[in-house]
Length: 382
Image (cartoon, rainbow, N blue to C red; front, side, top):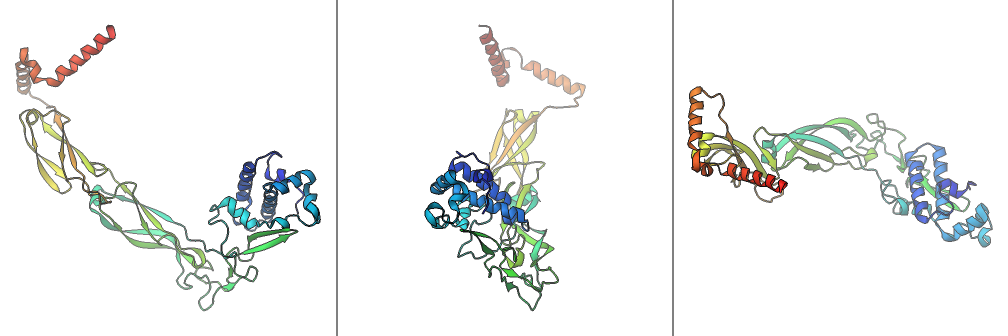
């Protein structure tokens, strides 16, 4: 048993709380855990030492005895002759599972230490779509570099005609129990590295791994109405697990490119429609685009720039079945450019005709704006 001071092992003060001790144990166990340091005997020894310190210092009775007598309290005959650690019936596998939960992929082993296959990794594929493709839906083929199950050995890792053998060290459990005095420490089997099986005659194609690198071609159906940030899950299309373990999933991440006419906001579409000065003043009709073709929009007389018109049902159908959005058209009045001398004279004549006592009714926004500016400065000086 280790003779290092348990408080020193965990790096805590002698008056540390149980919470501080658990926090220190969690940090050190993650650092020295055998699964993270395979083949490193020094790390394995440090991991055992950390576990010993944790078990003692989180038990009030053992901690009190340790504080008074040190390591001698747990040597043969200590704590009243034969109590020691064994009397508490502590299981370090249970302690580790209670503190860590799922941190190392499932915590403690279930069913009497039976091995658990490690599922293959999930993959992500970034797919860029046009607005039209996203709104209408589309089926696309993609190529994904990944690990796939080895066909010759059917993912087992063993050469065809042979099969993996049960590990003689752990008897298929993937873990072994090491006894050190009164302690029973459970750790990953050093022979099979937690797999529970040994491959004596490995497959020539995958060299015993049960999977090979390849590029898969998949057909992905994109539902109508998807938007940037949505993702589509393809179950079992991720990386194949080692030694016949289940495959992970593939997530197709959607990104919709910017459109040169429409801007999407949820299920609604927005666009700007330029109209002439004359049409805005006298009214008329203008063609506006939709994703289903052109439609006619009636422009009322005396329409101001920035006015919005809603065309119901001309937006995007929700991928979640919440109905169809609208198309909102914002009219933008264009100022005439490249005027001839005659056109300039006509505009000046028009402007002069707006003068006099009737000017207010021709410029309702200007009147309101300048009245507001005047009141603002009057309030500042009063």
